Length: 484
Image (cartoon, helix red, strand yellow):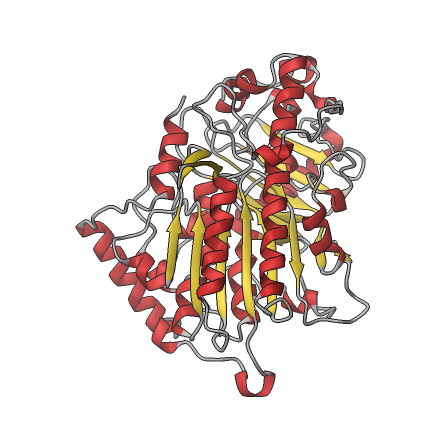
């Protein structure tokens, strides 16, 4: 049961594999395609840099396993996230942000490249991310466009040897356990990563723009440890006198109604680790919340450091989660499925250069992790490679009315006997889920009447046409995003 956590640690420290002949040939073909599309690093051009002015600094903050509703500004009356809330109150919060694949390895590859898993073909146990996709990743393009680039924390993606040196000027990956001895002091990993981020900020040339990617391990559980959740000492007293509400779908009757193949998954195994008694549920969810609050405190430190360095007025901050998380819903503990608690994440964009009354806006357009790379590139006034499948949401931040997606496609393709492969479509109203290795079972939910996805309508005759239509949409999206 610890294999998944071990793989995450190995990739987080970026121990890259040697390129074999197959990977080499694949990379050569992709590089040729990038040249033909005009997306190789040497082809990068600035987007009107002289006419727009100084390019902004950018900090991209990524949390691990933080679901969308674990923010005070998102309606959670229990969790303590004043700094995240402050970013939202002075920026823009997307209330419907999703990941294309709800697992850290594939999602992080999608964030770097702007590609769906089916295109970049990277997840656990796979060969390193193809070199041509690394070459068109947002850190590589920014660095070639004159940005100082940094990375701190959980990298989570294997790349070929030497690639991180091309992506980042400052590369400080980290790994579990959460507590480490640093200069004779016991420090939490969240705080250590905060220290390293501040080290990067202090090392930057004030006349050169920077992009820092700070990727927290928290609030991911330490799966190999029975205690699961570990938080900084400063969070010890949080939530002690609070009772965490139990989700409606945590009722055992809901789990018993699932098909057998969905009962025997890693989501259920981890439920026993975390939520199988009322007392454990309270203890574990409070630990999860404390870890998020620990991240929030580091964000506060970063904001203060930006102010101290007089960088606070020129630095855009983006906060996102790498995937959602089950907290007992459906009798689960984990992610990996296409249900909203698994694919829906927080997304906040704070741009101090915007002083308009539009600050504190909440947008309802459906945005995704594949949109992060093109958005960061447009913010930096760098051309977005044609290969990217996401779309910059800068126009949405600027209040422009543009054509935008009206549905999201999500998938999980890792071939693991404990995690069923799955794919699905989510629209404003409908959710359709299917499992390629279990074609006899489908899920259809009317989100308008059933936002918790409790009543499966797939077998009801009156919804037959809706089911067929969403199947067709799913097929179309797969055809669109698949490699040529």
